[in-house]
Image 1 (cartoon, rainbow, N blue to C red):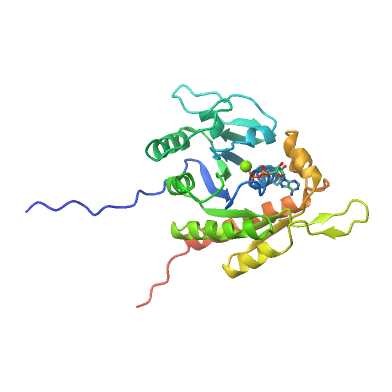
Image 2: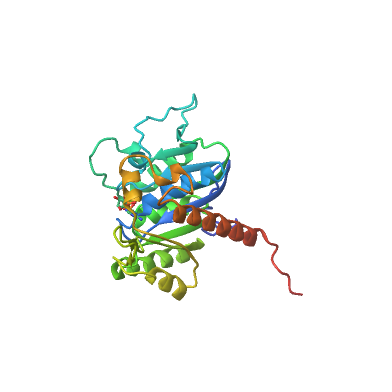
Length: 280
Ligand SMILES: Nc1ncnc2c1ncn2[C@@H]1O[C@H](COP(=O)(O)OP(=O)(O)O)[C@@H](O)[C@H]1O
Ligand SMILES: [Mg+2]
């Protein structure tokens, strides 16, 4: 009798050629500062001496080009591979390129998977220590396709300390656990605000709640980032604070997050490569 059909296997998550570690920046909801964290952490990693790429995969709000102050169109190689744009030593590609103009994209199931997969495969990153991916907010189809298409080393979940944002953090952590992607930790953004008049901290959205949620799920806190108008102005003007270096006002906590992310990525990779213990 001929052998039956081979058992169905999950498609293998492909590494991206030349990319050592892939870190996805996620959030349960929009507006919590996911792109701000992704852009500044990527730039901080460049400043810390690494080779870094940033993939803007937020098909609903591809804001990375604005935050990096570039409208440059990427070029293609002879064999039709996309060459990333370079800003201050950071290589960047935005999925906004798939939807030039202001029209909102309606992403639907069947076309979604192939478009994203094709796009991810067509970028020629070259050698990178880290590829940072700014995922779309939420826990739907697009996010799942993205994290199941490529071999993500780990995910960072960005939140504010407010209760509504935190409910979504739980969903995001659970989504990554379901698909076996390591959650590197939680970043609490907009966690406190220093009064410009008396320098007293004001907890506008609360404070420390991100840490509690992280603790409840057994994941580390990668850092807390204060509300600082310089961080917003940096993003709006296409000159993120991390560009000015670690000692610039407003940049310190973002560099701390970048270092915490690399430390966790090293730990996760070491774990994955460790030989499994054999018990006779
Ligand atoms: N720590 C912060 N301090 C001040 N403004 C911030 C901070 N983080 C984000 N913002 C601002 O909040 C807005 C939303 O941030 P953004 O990164 O676009 O969020 P998301 O990508 O999660 O939708 C932007 O105007 C950004 O400049
Ligand atoms: Mg965004």
